[in-house]
Each structure stands twice: as structure tokens, then as C-alpha cells.
Image (cartoon, rainbow, N blue to C red):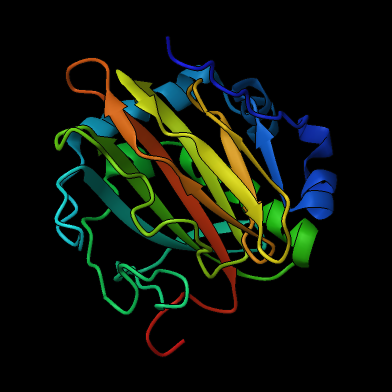
Length: 247
């Protein structure tokens, strides 16, 4: 018999900024995300089909075939969400020992996501939270659609291990979880012993992290049904500029 899944510690939307300020991480339940963003379950559900069309990630240095993804960049300033020219995703080795120092050109997020009214509302809501926590300023945002599948018998949501992303705020939104076991989320203090672990199960459960204070990872997934997969939307917010070789 498998061990019971540990439930996520849920924060009410009204307590989100205070919880992040206090402990550096928070989790919104699906209903909390809907309330906070000012959207509906149907608007969010309309995004989900696009995860079935993600192209393979050809940059995996562990030789795996378990990850598919798309990527897009935005600048959000004074409430305006502006798409940035398509660019490579880049991280330094300091934050990603496996894929750092590599310009990775992923296919862009498609119009079936980017042109839906809920999309800028979603991106903008997290930007307002960033400004509430760290001061009003332009935010340089990268959006990543991920599908981790069990093609290889095991899928690794974070093949680089426990890490920071080198940004100010990270949001991990669970979009779908089907036919898998594992995928436990783990969050640790960057400079201390405290940590917690839980499993996000319900679509649109959302983990929010102060990337300067905590590190995070997700454990591998294994299939319990054919075509098992775990889909997420990861949003990162950085002050000053996008990450890049010269930034």
C-alpha cells in the first residue's frame, strides 16, 4: 500500500503577502487562485488543452526524453503586460548545475494561451504581488509550460535537483496530474535547516516562492497508468533585467 500524500499547507489569498514575507513560501488552493486572480474555473480550464501540444525539450543533458515545454517572456510595468521579443532561456551554473550557461531556445507559447483574456490577468496579478513585496518597478517575466511524462519509466520535474532560479519570485501552478505517483514538492530555507514537503494534486494548486530565501525541488514521477504525466506552468519574476550571459 502506498503512503498517503502529504497535503499542501494552504494560505488564504488575503494572507498571501504576509505569509510570503514571513516564511518565503505560500500555497494557494485552486479556489484561492481563482478568487485572487479574479477569473473562473472555466477560463483556466480552457488553457489546459495546449499542454497536449508541447514539443520535446531537446536540451536535456541527462539523456532523458521525459520533458516537453514552451517558453515566453514579458515585461510588466505599471500594470501593463507587454510581450518581449522571443529569447533564449538562460541560467548561470550557480543556479542550474545541469543546464546552466546554455542558451536554450524553446518554441514560443502559442496564441491559444497568450491571446486568452485570462493570460495577462494571471501574469499581472503575480506582478502586483511582487511590487507589494519588493517595491513597484518593472518585472521581467518568463513563462514556461512543462509536461513531465513517464516515457522513460520515470520523469524528473527538476533534474537539476534542489535549486534557486536566480529571480525574485517563482510561481509553480499545477495544471494537470494524471496516472502518476511521486512528484512531491520540497521547499527548504536557503540559509537554514527548516523545510517542508507536500504533493500538489488538484489542478491550479499554486506554489509561490521568494526565490532569494528558499530553494525547491520536485521528486521524480513514475507511471501508474499509461501516458502518465504531470503538467505545470512556471512563472518567474525578476527585477532589473532578464537573466542572460551579459546580465
